[in-house]
Length: 388
Ligand SMILES: *Cc1c(COP(=O)(O)O)cnc(C)c1O
Image 1: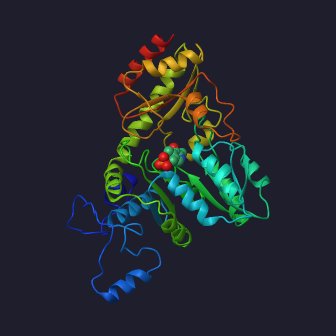
Image 2 (image 1 turned 180 degrees about the vertical axis):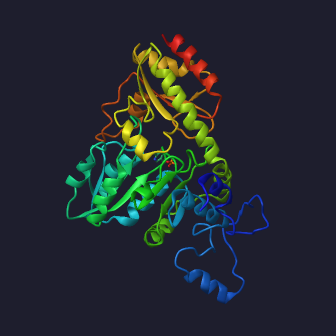
Image 3 (image 1 turned 180 degrees about the horizontal axis):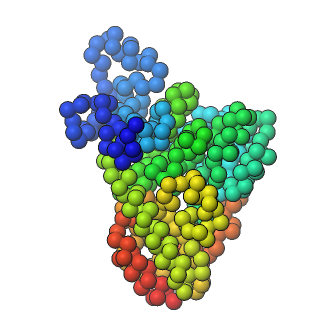
């Protein structure tokens, strides 16, 4: 088996025309059969009837092969966004009367999905402290169908010890899903830890350039078959152009991610020595309460870090404005660094109660890009100075 750096380049060989070195964009909403009998065969195939782009497109097939290989799963499905992947998976596997165990802290829209849409459709969820693996087992009920995990979780970067939770879930015949967006498949492989379904917002590290919206669901053939009908019914389709951009992004994903890991660790160490910074949140720092777990579960620690200012909330907001390299934007995973004042972003989008009340108002989230680390340090330095 090839390593991830090589898989990103050749993991889709043989999917389409072998003569293409750079893949073609298949900009067609519908594909013709060679004859009536061929159409019958295409239409009756279980999961990949490639006759209509909502059902599948040759560029999708390449992306699916690549991300499944990176995550180490049998197969994958692609969607129009990360939330498309999360909604499709949860709606496919849950019915009224079912129970879900999830974390107190999740990506905001995932928390809203559990607390809003799913609750309205009769699915109840119990939110537990992700840093306590035994809390998941204690929350199991007779009607528990799914456990949703996310590690590191936004914005405080708490980790979830996935292996024991996945083992416990399997013994209760409960499925596990992990949102692996923050870590990325280079740094962490939840499926190897026993998780059944791995979800990505490809908008972030996989795409990597802040120019597309996409999602991926990585799992085994049997579960992909179960999710497939909901997938084509909900219609969260990845456009062929975005699929092609994603494919192009994935080619350099391992190289970018290595640089991002290195930059982020260096900046986290730099910030923790700065007199105006009271604390830094980053799983790769010894000061992170779950540093041992981070070392066990992750190969690199990702590109998102948070820091709090001794000088208070006003200075934190001012700092974000004073930064010259990073822009003020609420995303992560791209080549450019982005910064936000955390409480402002969460305050604007939260629908309580989903465990966001304890976010300090002097905290900045910095999503590290691939700029030169010394330039990023200098920029943070001058902004810390100027913010007072
Ligand atoms: C961005 C993000 C999502 C949602 O992805 P979209 O592509 O914006 O729909 C889900 N989970 C995590 C952890 C994210 O960062």
